[in-house]
Length: 270
Image (cartoon, rainbow, N blue to C red; front, side):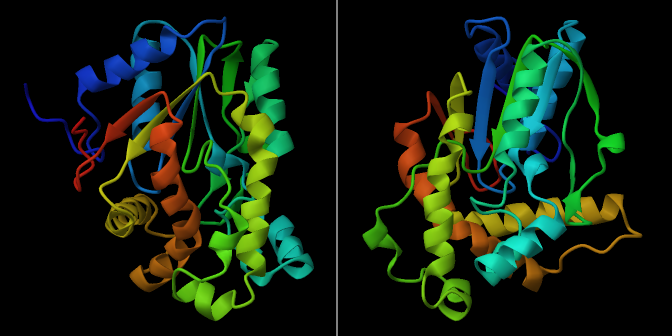
């Protein structure tokens, strides 16, 4: 058997076909296939490959990312003023527009042309609706991808000690991490829309930085006229994801219907 390809080049065709066939076998006229993995794990690449393969079979598959329903910059800045300065940064639970995500899934089920929300990561804000992609609805399948899908909250006692430099220096009283942990409960109505969850399990949280740095450099190479994050900024940014990311690694293997372990080159090994 040939080796699985690095996600930058795409996962191996057989692997993609297995995931698509798995999703299409779910019951219902428009199942929602959840695909979870930490930042840089290749989940967006896999979702796009599944949609492309479906299109080659003349099937319409919509791809929706939880990243595309982040609050815009102004909304996050207002949240930062009201609750905690760290909430100006996108990413953690509590920085997503859940009604928008639910309304989009509902619209996909009810037919007609549906605009899918789209977030510009280099500009760090949501694109205007006039620039959102459209999909014919209802599609045969929705692939919903995100980095912490179905991750449960931690017990309050586990929040007492900071786990990285950012929490130590910028969340000394624990207000931000308690807010994000409490916010996880509000995602339950969205998680209930998922008919299946596949979890891409990394070898460790430490690999996430290099994975995400590769993603950042590709993004900046594609848009050289725009400014992205350097390694130092990216390192700080990923500390925002560490607590919930480690919780996902601990809990999702017991929650997801399919767990796929990745090696440090993001190749499936199980």
